[in-house]
Image 1 (cartoon, rainbow, N blue to C red):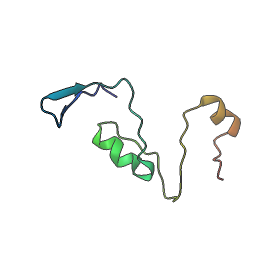
Image 2: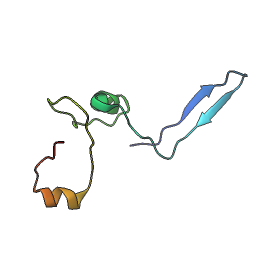
Image 3: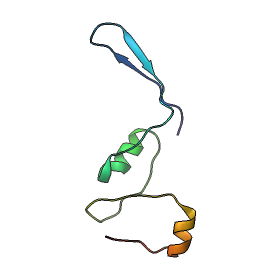
Length: 71
């Protein structure tokens, strides 16, 4: 993802320029539309409902041999 810089207006007047080093997307099941709006399209959510925890962990993927874990 490219660096994101935002300018916000302060209630007391003036503005503040923000450039976060890390953005945590906690959009839940709306993660794909949110990522698309940030120019980082994804397909993380399929046809299931409920809570999702998505991990990018190669050793776990290899150990599970491509299978999903449901709780």
